[in-house]
Image (tube, rainbow, N blue to C red):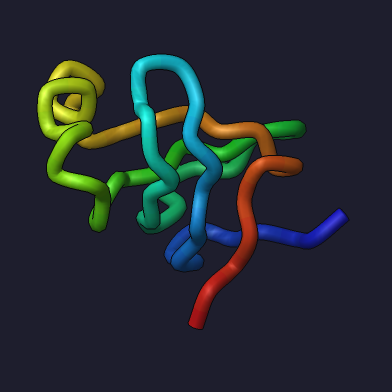
Length: 67
């Protein structure tokens, strides 16, 4: 499994009320998941992102590091 650190930029798969994949920056690393500050997302997900306060906890298996 990939090692993730605070500050890494990641691409995350859609889940829950988010209907599209999104990108963001890791704010906190847990054992099997990370807290992501959502930075770039599909405008159709605006309401869901707002309800999540621009943050989401995502399983490590559902994200990939990006440059």
